[in-house]
Image (cartoon, rainbow, N blue to C red; front, side, top):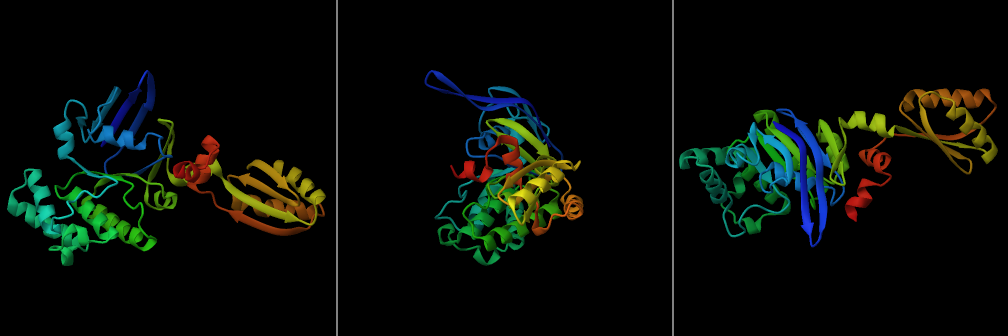
Length: 319
């Protein structure tokens, strides 16, 4: 559904050249739900703008739904839906009228557009709002309308650029329920950007991390967390001397990647926390060390980014 080779975008700022996206190679298969993660300025939106034909690449190649984004822009646009960060509907338009007009813009016959709109109004719980002006809708209702606008022409590929930003947790969950149900019904391929890491972790089948315009990780969320972050064991002892002895024991375990110590507490990063913790507790007990506390924390996608770049994705996104 998406194939890129060496996709690059450079901008001129006075006498300087800014590399926004550099040599990005992507493969997205039909039917996948892929999350594109990275801090602000990492190149996510620039990549999406190139894939949706809104921005011409400086170099490299990209095909979307089988068509070149530079030479076959109209064919690409017929086959994609794009939901940007801002509301796509006119504030003074009625919900149903705006959706029908969207279908007409894609050369759908008026009757076909109206029938498709009625399907989407029901599927996205917008039927009761059909005659309401867009300006009277809540934030969650507007985002559902944006999703409907992106799906009127039945595109095989849907781009969602931070679709739930600014929404409360209940509205976010409700929107995702609708998106996933429609995806199951239509088999739509979805490419998502988001700053909500738990959202990408739960929804996406693959996670692509971009930093400074370059892809630095591409795998399932579980694989990235296991391989690049690992579980964190936090174990407390009676005193720093016992903790230091336990740290030496932990460092000898095969699956342990890193051991740090603060006072009488050691922190152990390992790829197999469930197996490593009992083994470490038995080793400590066999050496006469009394364990006061023990805890295991699963890694997050932010831990992955921290491990890759030395920075927190949440902190850099906020900045």
